[in-house]
Image (cartoon, rainbow over all chains, first blue to last red; front, side, top):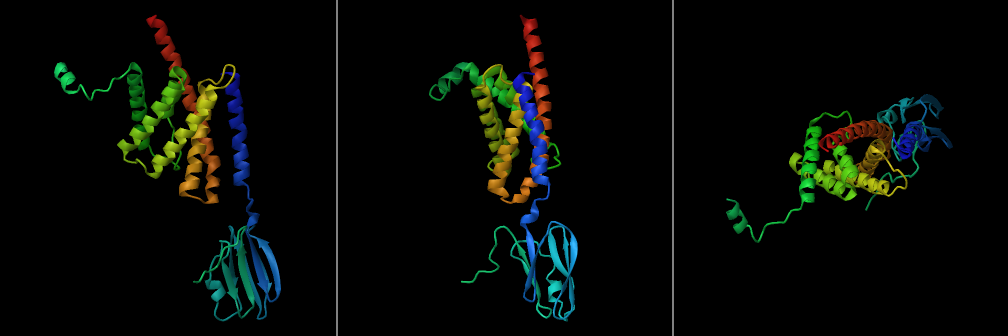
Length: 118
Length: 184
């Protein structure tokens, strides 16, 4: 082994932990969801799993964040359209509970169009 | 028979040099290893022992960069034609990896001082191969940032297999040297 060989091995030994740290630690704070209830808006990171209770005009809606996704779990409305919207995870996805006046929008670093018409 | 061959092939015979034969033999060796390896199951796409590169590195050390380019390019081309992956994504990845590792070997051949030994050469070549094919995969086939989650695993495999093939090259050169010594 020459000195250059040791340098290469050292480089590889430093590169691997660097890659694991930069690629595998959660820097997903770029993806957030904004929850609008009436006229107030709260922004939540999707990086941490938890459950939020949001008060609306009819009652309390429960919103769950898990594995970078967000959804309505329970709602006091009749149609349950918001619950049937299912999990939202991509920037631009949207679910709303109109009777309870609560909506969720997933925000990303680059906002996408939700629809395009010609 | 040979006269006949000579007469009829007068206009088409290609003069081959000893160098051509050397390249052809070594490329055949590398292609054989390449094909055997393509049959091995792989835990992750992109993870392969890369033993065919043992030949590339040994050729680089024994005969220089230009011969290594010939052997490596022939291996990728002929290997893919024989396996049936020519111009497919597999071929693109293999080709870009080979280009990247040859580029790094060219740099390594211009290092001052003692330069790199077999293990260092195999390691840089393996890592360059992985980066080359990873970025090709990212640019051409899967332009999604999620792909980068795979990079640490792929690079770990590249480092491990790079060192293993370096050890193989070293012992290979050692044996070759011994045999040459006995012949003298």
